[in-house]
Length: 48
Image 1 (cartoon, rainbow, N blue to C red):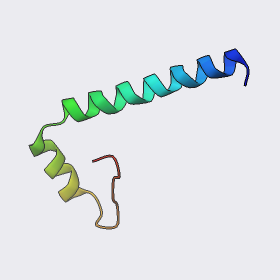
Image 2 (cartoon, rainbow, N blue to C red):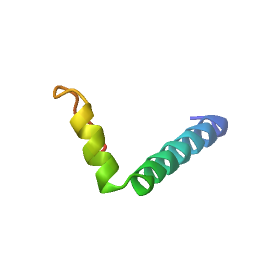
Image 3 (spheres, rainbow, N blue to C red):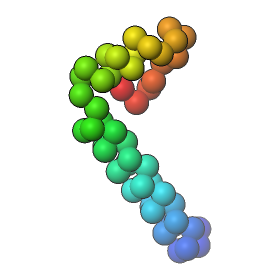
């Protein structure tokens, strides 16, 4: 695997991880419960 490919992969991974952490930290339990009550029943978020 080329070095540039590894670099871009790790950069993407860091970006995704940072975004997920920010969303988790930013959402309060109230917002999450509101989100779940408004979302369709069939919708399931594996991240939560």
